[in-house]
Amino acid sequence: MTNSNVTNHQYTEVITRKTKSLYILTSIRVVLSTLIAGLQIFFNIGITTSKSQVLVYIWILMVFVLSLIYIGLLRLRLIKQRLLNIFIYFQFLIDIILIESLIVLTGGIESWFSFLNILLTIGATMILGRRGGMIIATATAILYGTIIDLQFYKVIPISYNTSYKVTDFLYNIFVNITGLFFTAYLMGYVVSRLEKASESLQKKDVDLRELSRFHSEVIENIPSGLFTTDAEGRIYLFNAAAEVITGFKRQDVSLKYINRIFPFLSLPLVPGRHEGMITNNNNTKYIGMNISLYKNSEGHTVGYIGTFQDVTAIIKMEEEIKRKEKLAAIGQLSASIAHELRNPLASIKSSFEMLKEGSLPAETMNRLMEIAINEMERLNKIVADFLTYSNPKPAEFARFNLSNIINELIDMHKTIQEDITFHKDVQENINIIADEQKIRQLLWNLLLNAIEAVSEKEGHIHVSLKRADHSIEIRIKDNGTGIKKEEIDKIFYPFYSTKDKGTGLGLAIAYRIVEEHKGKIEVVSEEGQGTEFIITIPVDARKT
Image (cartoon, rainbow, N blue to C red):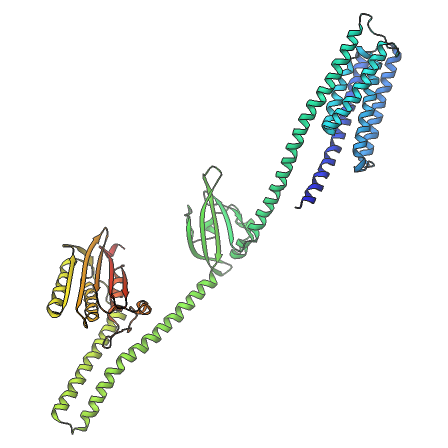
């Protein structure tokens, strides 16, 4: 809302308030006139002569007639807005004349109705503000003081008690005039404070309405579904996006438990990330949802807030990507197998073709036969390793001493590889529950990989075993050639090898064994600086 709109709105409210105040003032005028008429009829208060009584009745009739005229003018809206203030001042000036005439009719200084001046000042200040109240108080004071002076000097033929002295008249004038101005000042102060408070409240009301409208528009226009529930999980808010995503109307889900709309949720709700499916009219959708606590201003949890999206397209896309990745992996694996098998098959074929000629020396024939047998063994190893990788046997968990196994494997390689120095940092008597044969194969493959990495230089291999809480950590580090940065992410792929004679299945099998034991394997390597494998396995893989 612009400032101009706010100003126009406030101006309209002021006009409306003043119009309502005029209705109230007219009603009060009629009530007081009726009260005065009753007092005259039953008690003849302030009436000294029958002539005065008739004049009072005429006065009351005039008040009724004027009140009807005022109401008619307001009802018919014959008073334009720009003339409203003039019309209000006119009413109050007529009221001053009427009240002072009533005071004259009922004894002047002895009149019981001088209090009406105070009431008139209060009403004027409330409707016209501090400035208008002072103007009406001044006009009333002047007219009242003039009447009392004229009564004292007997210009106006109003009888009074002969015991009254000049000081009594002066005191009466002083008290009434002081009361008028004091009332105007106090009421002006009160009214100005009320007006400021009213303006502040109006501004805050406008701001709150705008904030409420903005809040509603934001909630209804955000693309994500939004709901709020109470502490028991009953739905209170369900925005437009939530209706579109779920297919349920907000009036149909109001006060229902949230798990009736989202079956994958359980009560009481748990803050955090949730995923699941919903079905409506045979239409299944995947939903991704975040739930958080809904707290009041005092920090107490009063319910839950949930935002959710339809992730069906994303899930289907991920499934399609996984399917394509799986097909690509199968294709790559098939190509790798074909490549690994082609070389030994080519050697065997060449050997048998030469043997077929039958004219070769015995020594050459023996050599060719040896090559064929070696290549057959190589084929057998490739097939065996591939079967181990692709169709592993279920793990057979049992308790065994891992420290003894590592020491045995290191001692065995020390005997075979005399030119390599092994460094041990193995904690004794570390028992774990795992598949002993597979753990042996894991360690054998990693040690063999380290030995091959340092075979062309003065090799050093560091092996450590430590226990930390509910897991064990094995580190195998070498000072070999290291692994290139771009190759680190590929070393666990089947048939990926940087060695001329490697099958590329050793590390792939090691990775599979670690996965089977719910563990983790990490590689830290830098080309020319060596490689370190860090294996973490639970002490009891069955419980993970």
